[in-house]
Each structure stands twice: as structure tokens, then as C-alpha cells.
Image (cartoon, rainbow, N blue to C red; front, side):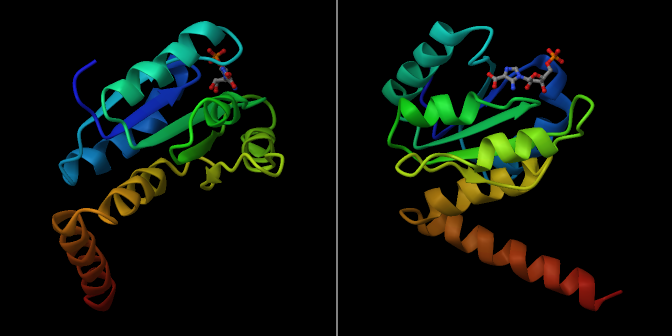
Length: 156
Ligand SMILES: Nc1c(C(=O)O)ncn1[C@@H]1O[C@H](COP(=O)(O)O)[C@@H](O)[C@H]1O
């Protein structure tokens, strides 16, 4: 795996359209990332291997997206002490409420920073904010982004 700062994992290729918003944020901020489809349920060994490979490649933050019984973020969290951001995906008959609860309700000792249902954009921004703790250039870009958001509102 080439050097990366963020690994995006998603439980199914059907999650890709939502997760494109996280990829767009990382591209906008110039953060090196990789995206893989891996499932804690369907490909458990490959999921663990992806975490190991990503850490060896310098990964600092994991973003894990899954719908329905969303165990991917929790399993990744069990394999790393890097921050894990969980994105509950709206899929299946419960429209993401199942994924939200199964992602956010981690047992004490294993935190997953969970964004809203389909909150892929915020997951990307949160990853950038984590990386910005040790990167002044990213901090400046985040401040410019907040300013642009405020100006867009005030111009309406
Ligand atoms: N929740 C999980 C996990 C997991 O948690 O490991 N693996 C796949 N999935 C989710 O199942 C949903 C339906 O998947 P399919 O569309 O492939 O049937 C997807 O939203 C996926 O993230």
C-alpha cells in the first residue's frame, strides 16, 4: 500500500455513492487516502489485514462506513488505537437507524467517533481536523473553509 494518512473502509460497494463525499473532502484538502470495500461480516480476515497494511503505510485515521448491522467500525476499532470515525449508512428497511445505533453504541473502552446517518462529508472533515492537530497547513485550510461557509450564508 502507498503512503496514506486516511483509510476509508466500507462494508459494501453499495455504500460507494455516499462515501464519495468523504473522498471529495480528502481530495479538496490534499490528504492522501485509500478506499477499500471490506466487511467485518463477509471478509473478516481481509478487514483485519487492511488495518495492518494501512498502519504500515502510515495511516493516522480510519473512516468506516456500513449500513444495517454495522459492525465494521467497531471491529476496526478493536484492531487499532488510531482514531476510528464511523459513518452509519442508510440502507435496508430501517434506513440507517440500525446502523447509527450499532456504530455509536460501542462498549466503554472502544470509542468510535460516529457522525450522522450518511454523514460522509463530516467524516472527511473530522479526519482532516484530527490530522490538522500536527499540520499547520491543514489548519489554515480548515479556517478558510469555515470562513467561506459563513460568507456564503451571509451573502444569501
Ligand atoms: N454492516 C455491514 C458490514 C459490516 O458491518 O461488516 N458489512 C456489510 N455491511 C452492510 O450491509 C449493507 C448491505 O450490503 P449489500 O448492499 O452488499 O447487500 C451495506 O450497507 C453494508 O455496509
